[in-house]
Length: 99
Image 1 (spheres, helix red, strand yellow):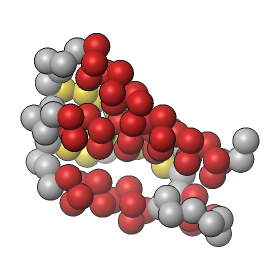
Image 2: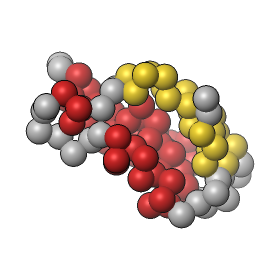
Image 3: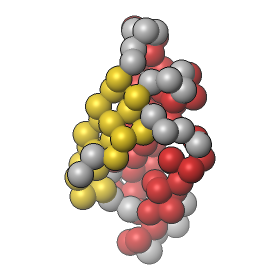
């Protein structure tokens, strides 16, 4: 599997991870997601899905060297603007960007 496929698959699987976390603990109040490279897209999908399910969940979001497929010249919509839009799209102050 190439890195772009990994990022795109991860983005989809993140939604399922968000569902699983919420289904197992609907009273969840805080989640810390730490991801590296293509795994950053799993974290993004998870954060977005959790916040869609419950906008009161606090999500701490730390990305370590996130992989941006469209920066490599591949035909992918996943890139810096999509990752950065997470906060704006959700309009949610519950996301904490780690450093």
